[in-house]
Length: 434
Image 1 (cartoon, rainbow, N blue to C red):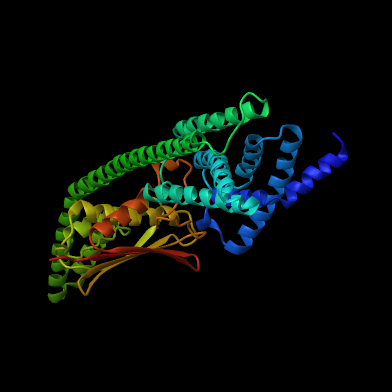
Image 2: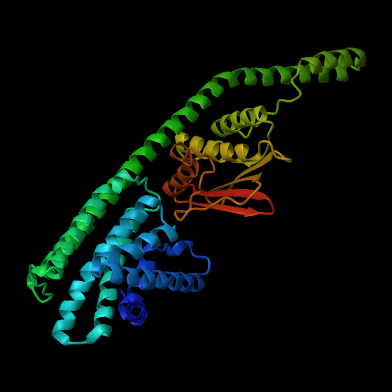
């Protein structure tokens, strides 16, 4: 093949409106718009890069084996490696869906163009419009099934890839039969259009089923993990409540001892008072601090967390003003406070100022809870408002913030996470019904 032929093919590729439309379609399908910091600039750059890829690989395909199948596949493969916004499984599924959608769109566009004789411009616009509709449907189903947070594995999207590969193979057979003169390929035939629509519907149905199954699996896994986490925390609270009886006895004993010292001071027996106070001080634990708000459940939860924090070298500074009874279930209140404080203790441990500030107050029919702790860097807030875990074992961690958010929503409240000047603050508001 002469150099002039190659140059002519590349010039036609550069001037082809189909290539512009395909580059737009690739960027549309493989870009996660919520991740873009500078949407216009980023999209323009991505479109330019994808257009170069389509020009070069499309030209290479036309020179070696000219047909729409190879011209469709090669640019998407490169784009999937370059645009990494989505997790690998979703990226693979979207890539195969894009390939099929574009091939089907060419058949639909050619059929419409054959009827209206609109030329390459109409065909390009129809192809892009077709792909945009498929993209909107996929976006809708992914958002509805929370694909961004679902646990979608590579194995999960294999059915989507198989169905898409079958659709591409079907179109390839029709095109190759025409290329080798076995049977002329007519874009006007109803069979061709029905084959495209049947393949497209099948692929979308399979992908939606995969998303629904992934969502169900993730929900079940999350519920099991949350239930296990709550059981562990409730068991810890029960153990602490049993052991706290001795603390109540200690408080009662200390109260009696101080009454005895007061009696000695009233009798002006200073020597005996000083001697007794010295013995008492030697028996007391100077590191023990006890929260007594009048609400036994809140007291037990916070005191348990104080013990846990002290074991990790963290100090909890509580400021609590709550009534004796709060209109929230014990498990919810326990899970809410322990998750808030556990996260804060873990973040503060080992820092320069390992102090966690806890504030609880009732105001205008709402319970306000604020937990602040030092943090080395700002946390990553996910699209659903929860925090991304920094632990390597993601499948068994990261449920704490989801539990906090769920409990707040169940009680008509809200959750807010903020980071400023090295301090991370979690604020929760619960509505006190009844």
